[in-house]
Length: 178
Image (cartoon, rainbow, N blue to C red; front, top):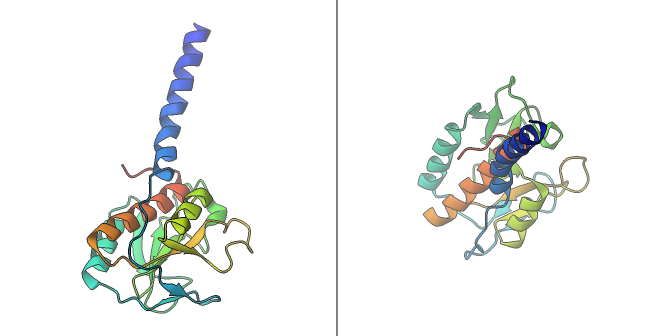
């Protein structure tokens, strides 16, 4: 009986952990559009990219569907940015990786986003051209995965950006969306 219980317990833990791992291990295609230039300091902004209002609206619509997330004015970014706020009663798996309060990400008026990603996923996003490390990413505890995700310019890029924001949600909350 003990052996059977142990096998069932291991299977249950594996089933619980695999969705989280798979969310963080999604493959990222190489970004084909040029990587936007960004400032080296704070405020950390990108330049040379025009927002596509329709793509930005679709992104916000998708994020608004995440369980326990409310969109509203940012608590930490530039005026006009939209904060992705988690419900205050939500249990967080990575509370030290949230930059301020319960805001796990925010979208700037130019369509770029700052988000806290699993550090491994953040590095893969940087390497594939989707993101740039925040200037303070290696200066503050818990911020090693804090990145700027560049403005999507096509529907295909929007899909990747949404996957990265979903990865941020999963990393911070421990909950998967799929």
